[in-house]
Length: 342
Image (cartoon, rainbow, N blue to C red; front, side):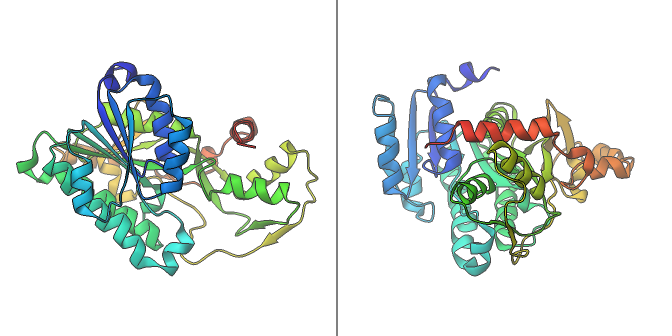
């Protein structure tokens, strides 16, 4: 089913709707003509900015609230067709310093979202996760892994039929708050040394449009308990730095200051754990991980046993065949630079 037809006349609430991903969803939903959109977040200033930006859109309302407040969440999500759950804390270094806050938001908050969705009988809830949930080594990744399990376990609950939970797993979305591209741009523009953690570090990349395509595809096609992941490409951080310098017409001799790998940070990321391979299928450019209750579990396990080492490596960010070409990476950087709000 096409997006235009699926979202038309639907009532949609975006939790964390003032964040980078929530704002992208809002911008992409408006042309699809849903019946009503609600932005739910705890950031008053960003809500004010969105109100001003979309002042001519009469079918959007805004509610201040926190997913940690179950009563507010239940009230705010009543009578909706779709929940997009984007409310989360995401920065690895801060999660290591303040794990309690991440647990309250990413784990307890997600439990509250699930309770509210079941109580209000919301047909579809789509939750945003991260590749850091795969074999997590930091608090942020651990909380995201628990968030995924909270929603994928729903298929075990027979009393909640008609309500489904789908998770999408992101790589690094270009240009989001606090991500690599804005940091590099501001360091170069401010004539400051570029900070780098590790020269061999690799990351999966996706554009905002690819992120939205993933979310909408999963919303329309996903089944209860599934995790949907884009077949992303990756690159080395040092390669991104060199391409930034070239495209911003700066010398490649620009000073680079190593700061070391931060606590909990991985050198490389993975899209899917090895033990999940037997529940993973490819469809339309996406990997779809079925929940543990899938009837295909035995058949899929046999497929996984036949998977070659190279096939398993394709889920790793340091697998050279996953690397973006120079042209592909340049396109990502140019898209970011073109859309800067200068």
